[in-house]
Length: 367
Image 1: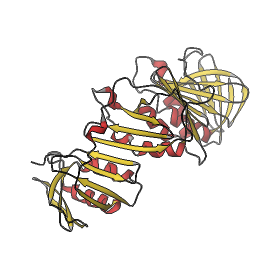
Image 2: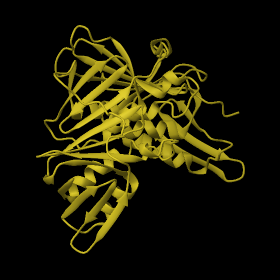
Image 3: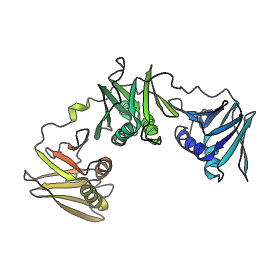
Image 4: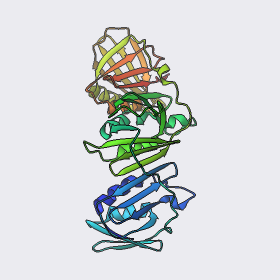
């Protein structure tokens, strides 16, 4: 194999591919990328056997078709540090030579033909959605998914598909984010109403550079989801298990409701949390007629208090929340104002932004 790559295009491809490559694995070949050149284009693949990426590079001149399997981190580091506009990759007998104007590297890899098959996308998709819509939805819910949990089903994002709407829901048991986005067309009739997509696959989708008109096609095959966008195909096993019945925890009977400035509350939460500690780990929201007070304290550090005027005439309430969980949601709210609803001090807080986004946050006991 011999091919001349635009270095920027190659670096962009490797940036996405290396996010799939496992740092530790009993199978050394999984720490590699597979590069296959045919007459006009080059296909690069990476997988950890659960999630895979198939990436087509067209900004390339192929002199000699072929295949090479090389360690992803080594190749990515060489490409990243290079100053050349064009890099030449030449491979034979399991070794890959990378040549720039003043540099020459040789990396040893694996013999061709040994890399696991990474699925590609054939035919039309079952679901179609604009990339910018999907990425917007991912940004507003992925942060709430469980990072590590024995309840495997909450390590993913629930997709609820109905008519021309896609509902994305994520929870870690202490908070829940739900976002509704529009599909480009009604899905095919055989598409299941609910699927659970791993957080890792959702995070990869969020890394694809979004053009204004980029569309995403989704296909479900057996227990796999295939997602195609422009020159990238992401494949992933679906999460098995039952997602919690989340509708049951969304409050519908709250009487304390107010509209707040997103920016002002974010600033107040950040300032009130400056003097919290691991032990105190929470801030207190005190709501009374005409004002809301954000306070944080740690016995060994001191205390902080931030006052904010609000349009509120109801009963006073004090409630504790994790400041980080509040900051996480305030960062992704896209409206200048949001609605905040409360019940009793031992019941969750409810945040709504427009008609398509809501966030449920469990309170914490500040002792």
